[in-house]
Image (cartoon, rainbow, N blue to C red; front, side, top):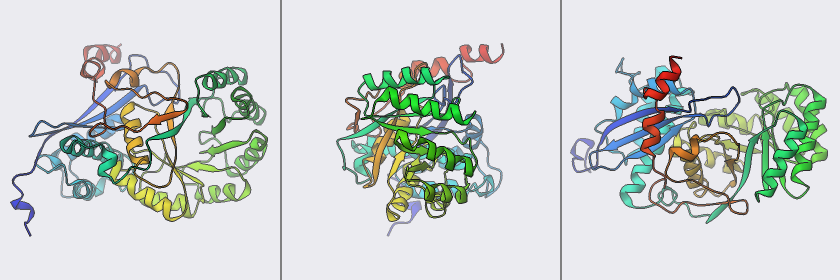
Length: 392
């Protein structure tokens, strides 16, 4: 058996870039699609992969670009140059083990996520196969999606937004954050108007946005029951597993959570201790494809369906579709329908569009999306346009 030193004919990584792109105007609202941290991995054979990270972008950029400090702390770029991009499991553990001082979760796992997605993109492009096929998938030709938007500032405007989504042909929609949590009367009115705008036949998801304590969440779930929510998402603070356990046992409404998690151990706690019903996974935060496959297997072992989280760009959407097509317990796809954020529409040459409430599974090699280099040049940190805004 050949040792690692004898593997001289493999493709090799030549560079890892963390590129921060940002819209000229960023609103103060919970919309993570207004900027993006794109990861680009280059190889000596001219095959380039891309990934994405939804996190604190400059913190992740530092983890990737950082210099060697000691054996337990080294920038990911330095660790990866010269390595074989096909060895995704080995490289995942190399990045994690050689940065154990940076923490066992958080921005380190987020950084690894973007790199891992880019490595799988390289493998797919090199082998001329979509990532889902490399992962052993093929469960679907298309997946049902839900339109994901923020609650409007008033219940009446939320009704208008729900009507818009219904008219676009979606079969499910999620409303979240915004004014939710101000008071009980307004909370119930927002959900009531969302349901009225969607009608009785569409599925309604409610994303509370981490706003309540356990007792209040139990009260709101009971108040929302008459509007038949498909699920109630993240009503509690992250890691309040005891609270999630109490809430899940108190209501017939599905409780969904997981976008705040990243490590396999925390997902285990969310499932076993928290007893959450729908496990939400963001591939740009949980360790990429390598991490997400393990989380999906854990959820399946405990008979839980999974859904993606993604409010950023089409890189995230593509990764989610490949992953969900590779597992038996996929439930539904989050698909951003928020008006007023254009970055996702100009960052990649390809875009996704829902047809009758479904998204087609990509069939192109790798992720099936490519960067629009003109957008990257115009909106990346350091470009004249963004630098002038930062100095204003």
